[in-house]
Image (cartoon, rainbow, N blue to C red; front, top):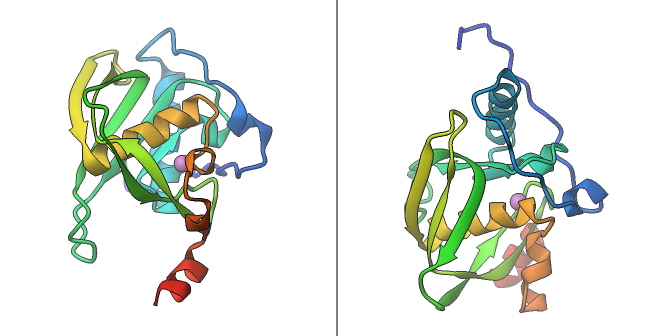
Length: 179
Ligand code: NI
């Protein structure tokens, strides 16, 4: 990328847009100009919105493409870093029935958060934009981020999976109430 390469930040769809409820279609051909462009747009968009992950459906592209990654942040030492990952046609296997509750937020549900149970230990696999297989075990926050993005490709948003409905609300109100 050159210094003057333009950022292509796409608009992130918000809950209520029916496109977020569609099931995304598998990618059939890897390493195409179109796929590379989509991924760059998704990376630019995720960075601009300061997200931990993004699914193609969130920018209105109904393909099974997700990206995620979290840098080490000294302000949030409890958040484990996750390698920046492009995952196409993802699948996963649950390695333990154990689930744990954790806070989630979503660029498509801005300003809000809620507690969602997720499997704590999974194995996921998929392909990068060149068609190379990626297969990893993930636990904790890493497993949570994967499951959240995978749900997007199924047309599922995290509020659908909240069991403790009182945990769902505007982040600033929840923080004020908890203070
Ligand atoms: Ni999301």
